[in-house]
Each structure stands twice: as C-alpha cells, then as structure tokens.
Amino acid sequence: MSSDKDLECVNGSRGLWLVKVPKYISARWNKSVTPEVGKLTIKSTPTGFPAGGSNFDVRFVLNDAVAEMKENPDDAAIPKDHKFNLSKSNAGQTLAVFSQTGEKLSLEGKVVERAECRPASSDMNYMKLKKQSIYQASKPQRVVKQLDKIVNSYKPVSDHKNNIEFEMMKKSEGKKSREDKDKVMDMLFAAFEKHQYYNIKDLVRITRQPITYLKEILKEICTYNLKNPHKNMWELKPEYRHYREQEAE
Image (tube, rainbow, N blue to C red; front, side, top):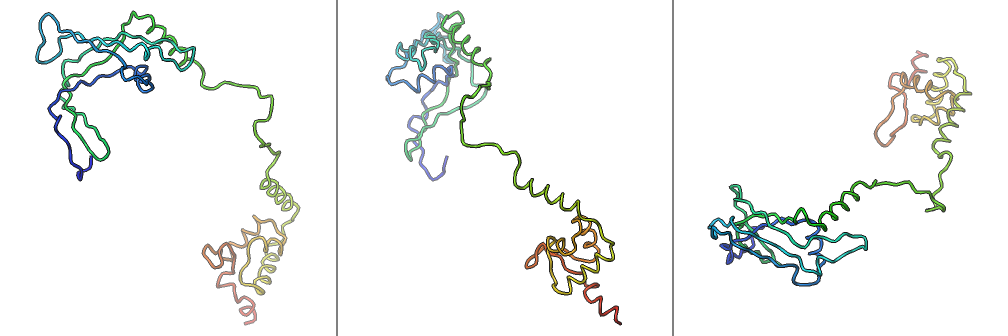
C-alpha cells in the first residue's frame, strides 16, 4: 500500500467473515451471469447467540442456475447444500479486508469469524464430483500418438555442416606427416620474417603440419594475442624476433 494515498476508514469497525469455499464453487461464481449465486441461512443454537459468534448453525445453498452450470456435457453436477464449519478464534491474528477502486483505498472491516464451506459427505453429487476428480488426476499427462501426416516443414538432416567440416579437417590432418621440429621452426621463422602476425589457419597452410603438433611448437616460440587489434593471432616472442641478426653476430 502506497503512503501517498488516503485510506478510507468509514467501515473500519465493521465485522466480516473470512470463508474458504471449494474450487468448484469459486469457478462457477466467476462465470455466473446472475447477481444471486446462493442463499445463506444462520440459525442460533438453543444456548443463544454468544458474543463470540461460534455457537450457531450456518447453511449455504447454491442457486440452481449456478449449480447446474456446465462447461462440458461430461462434467459432474456439483453439490447445492453446504455447511459452514466455524473456527473458535483467529488464532491471535488481527485480519482486515481492504479494497481499491481506481486510486481510492478503503478499509472494509476486520475479520471476526473464520469458516470453511463444506458439502455434506453423504451428498451423491459430491461423491460423483470426487470420483471424477480422482479419475482426471490418474490420467497420464502425456500420451503417444501415431501421426499420419507431417505436422511441420522441419526435416532432420543426417549430419550438420559444422560436423562435416570438422571431420574433413581431421581427415586432412591425418594425411599430414610430422616434419622434424627444427625444420618446422625454420619454416615458421621464415614466415614471420615476411609478416609479424598470423592466424593458425595460415600457419597450417604454410607448414602443412597437423594443427595440434603445430600449436605445441608455437607455444614455445610465439605469443597468442587475446586483445585487439591482433586478437586470435600469433607473433614471435621478443627473444626470437631478431634471431638471424643474433646468429650473424
């Protein structure tokens, strides 16, 4: 509740009942088009009407139109007659009911009685309703159906493009034989004399060596760049960049 809104408290002292009703009743109330959904009868006990409000008999009868409402022909009829089971107290709780109409907030009253609306256990409609609910709950959520036509245009492929390219690369690498390490290093040094940066594909093409074997050698003499502007490219380590001059000296 926002603090910048005024609260209407005219009905704050009014006593209200908090009643729990079965789902089949609330579902029909929400769909009912008639203003009258049932009748409530309250009878006091022979001991009188005590201040606590717990010693009296409460009966609720659904309207015929609401009780006979069905969404499907197979829906079971629901019970019409119900009884309120009243609780002795609110278990030390202070409960209140609020409403909101547009920007207006109102305190409708405080809960003075809690009850549970229950049908008679011997009611035949109630027994049929429980039987139907148990049957619905026992039905499997998923069933296997045989299709006699294509339900969409998707067709599975035997293999995907990435897998084919990977297999082709593995086959091409399998045909490459490993050269002597010193010979591969000479090819790499010669390549890096022409350009400072290379990606792995170009180095594989130049040396014609398996990529795993080539990476082992590159890690010894090269640095792999992880940042722009030369991201994912190899360059010689500083100690190898002028190796020809060092050999001449």
